[in-house]
Length: 519
Image (cartoon, rainbow, N blue to C red):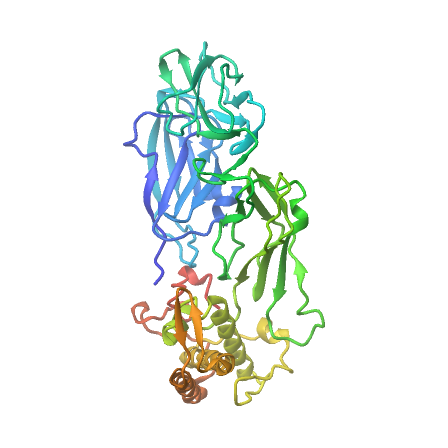
């Protein structure tokens, strides 16, 4: 059951001494996943979180850095230099939207101080991270403006990311240096830079570590900087999103991480398309596949897609990577990669988890996208039947020939208990029917599901038939209750319902204030 998103960890806090970055990161760990667009968008981000000088009341904005899904960590960074020796207050407002539709209840406020020794935060600019350098490169960086005189930079270079035995170290007052010495070919080198006002004192923080490969026989690993792969391989190593995401309210962060750098013509091998999944007959082009607008950006071995449009309801999206894509050495992928996700289904009267619990099936056996689609079909059928736009045909297939898009768009939602239970039963009925049709041909055979094999016996099909029969009986049982209702159920949230004019979907959680209802 979804809960309200609240902060479980924050940095910096009043207890963090010696914050030395002029543009420190603001780190927030959340108890639940949050909706990223509210922090990726500058306007909404600066409404939710502000940083104010405690004395002058000057406010400072932040930039979005990243969201680490594994620990629900949101990372922002102050956009302009703060003043040393100054105390700042961070305000985080309530009503931060979680990905499940619920909003935080608590407002947070805390202070932190910038140490007197704070120095510019150094950003490494060249050579690019995880790049190949056939000639040993010059190292360049940049830092924000600073008023302390005699500021210098310390540079370290080593063939180990731990810098346990530094191969090269130097200081300079400029922002570039060409390392002197003899360096081994076919070797990965790591480098970092920090700043100080006077040698040995007021030392600033080290920059993030960057790496490059000196030689021609290998390419950099896209994420670890430690493991390096042979140049005779090229493939998609990982993605920034889970393949098969369904019922999404926003577009996912789409980044592909390759094992080596794609060639400059990468866009010719990439395609993002969408397809409407709404049953309809009022448009001859309703089921035509169309291209999603947006643009690709290459950063090292990572390709990121920036969407030029918002996600649409009742729509399936697919990202296709063609096998002919090449890397900078002319090697091709050799296989196609396909990824998909879908927008929210509307209407949507029952949660995915409810149906999965009834089926007792894993996502590998029955994908989320399939369940969501049949929930949608059953919900649409319920809505249409109440208003007389479609008739039920006994069996697996339902007729939608007279159903118009206006039914979905214009008719009121159904709020009754009967609607919930009828849709639940109808969804199971449709799914079990689809499973029977698919599996009848496989009786007596074994199918591989994940890491194990399962024999499809007559008993297995009999159990599916029994589940379908039970679902059909439930549909008949709740047929008389399949009516619209403008009055809420009038029971407590603890019993699984809300007083917000809609049913509380256990898989999505309550929508605070009546917004973001599950249908």
